[in-house]
Each structure stands twice: as C-alpha cells, then as structure tokens.
Amino acid sequence: MINILFAARPERWPAYEAPLKTALADAGVSAHISPDIAPQDVDYIVYAPNSDLKDFTPFTRAKAVMNLWAGVEGIVGNETLKIPLTRMVDPGLTQGMVEWVLGHAMRFHLGMDAHIHASPGTWDPVPPPLTWDRRVTVLGLGELGAACATQLAQVGFNVTGWSRSQKDIDGITCLSGANGLTQALERADICVLLLPDTAATTNTLNAQTLAIMPKNACIINPGRGPLIDDDALLQALDSGHIGHAVLDVFRQEPLPKDHPYWTQRNVLVTPHIASETRPKYSALTIAENISRCERGDPLLHVVDRSLGY
Image 1 (tube, one colour):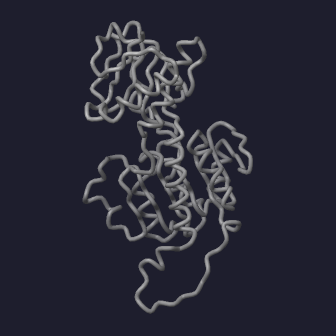
Image 2 (image 1 turned 120 degrees about the horizontal axis):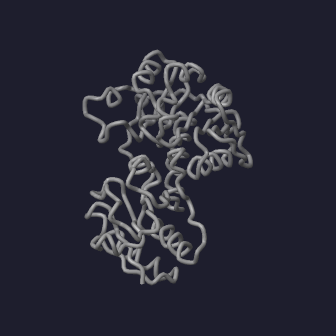
Image 3 (image 1 turned 90 degrees about the horizontal axis):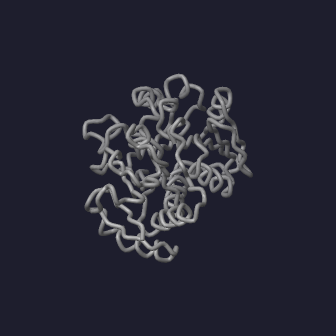
C-alpha cells in the first residue's frame, strides 16, 4: 500500500476525501491517503500552494507532487522540491473555463449590457454582428486556452491564438513570437488572456501592446492578474481605446475595496470564479497519474520548471 499526503488547507479535506479514495480504488491503486502522514513514509503529495507545507526536504521517498491547481507559480520556484511536479488538468476545470469565457465573450459580442441597463422606453433596433465577423484572440494555448479557442471557433468567431511556442490547432490561426503577438493583438476585437504567470508574461498587456488592439476592444482575463499592467489598462479604458474589460484575477485578492476597477463603468469584476478545481473531477486526474507512476509509465502534465509551467 502506498501513502499519499493530502497537503492543502484543512477545510478542503472533507470535500476531497471521498472522491480521492473512490478514484484511487477505481484506478486499482491500493493507497492510504490522509492529511496526517509522517514525511518519511509519504510516496506522493497532493498539494495546494496555499497549504502550510513549504519544505519538501523531509519527504525522502516521495515520487511526485500533484498540484491541485492549474497554476503552479506558488510552488514552481521552491528550491526544496527535487521530485517531479504535475499541474492540474481535469475535464471539470477545462469545462468551467470554457463556459465562463464563452459566456462573457457572447455577452460583449451581443451587446447585452446596452439592453440590460437601458432606460424604459429605449428602442434602438441595431442588431449585433455575426460571430463570423468578430475576431477573437486567445493569448495562451495550453490545455485551457486551446479548449476555449476551439469552442469560440465552433460558435463562429474568427479565432487567432498566440503562444510562446508554436502550436497547431484545427480551425485556429496559431501564432508565436514577438511578431506573432503583434499580429494577434491587431485582430483582437476580443482578447482572452490564458497565459501562465511567469517573468516572461508579466504585463503582457501594457501601454504599448494595448495600443496595438482595435479601438473599443474587449479584454477578458481569467488567467492571471500580473498579465495586465493595471494602470495602463485603466488609462486605455478612460481614453475609450479599450471598450470593456472582464477581470476575474488580480495581483491582490480579494481585490481591495478602493481599487479603481470597482467603479470603472466599463469593467466587470468577478471574484476569481472563472474555473475551479472540483474534487469530483480532479480526483480522477490525480488517481490516473499515481496509477501511471506505479506502473512505470510517464507522469502526465509534468511542469517544466525552466519555463515555469
């Protein structure tokens, strides 16, 4: 029997206990999983970066750390971590992100706010364009970005994707590199940010790159707060160059009550709810990876620490 340490906030264990035990049993893994196992006896660690565990040195026989979150910026730089680290990729996390992105893209595309907030008696029968005539750019073509780009294309949007390394996705114009980023932003009537949080992606949207985007463009950020230079975005919104922003992630969370985003008329703030790791689905990913490792197969979704994701 293998020992699996659940290293997350204590209040998360009741929600994860049954799904993890069921998924491991269904995967044929004989395991003891608990938040309380002596470090020297641990074979795998199921980990959330906001847990109290910061020093991995005592876990001398552990084979891998399974991150519960899609983002790994809170652990990837930990110098005591010498074993493989995997990030969370599960169907529930992906589906949640696709639904959130598609919903907010369609809200902007259809101009729903004008009707939701219209004064009584307002009658302005101007139809929105078809999705065929609206250009969407997705920055970041990992698991979540590729899934969102594909769904947006399936409903008719003209979709361009950009990533640091070249990708090939059916139905998507895929670009990379500095010149590719410029081209992607030039056609971004709607820009969806799903890049990882690394030194190379900080302030991807800044005064210079925002100026490249079409006038009245919409920015949708369910990725990471540091991807946007907040001061530059506020200036672009005030000037009218950027028409709307939907922001789900921020440098400081919860977003402070006095932050200008709360009162900016063309900004919608959502409280980091675009997608969530759900125990029912994430347990399946964890069980599959542990089962693979025990069989001697390669782990899935291993983090490249030189890239930071």
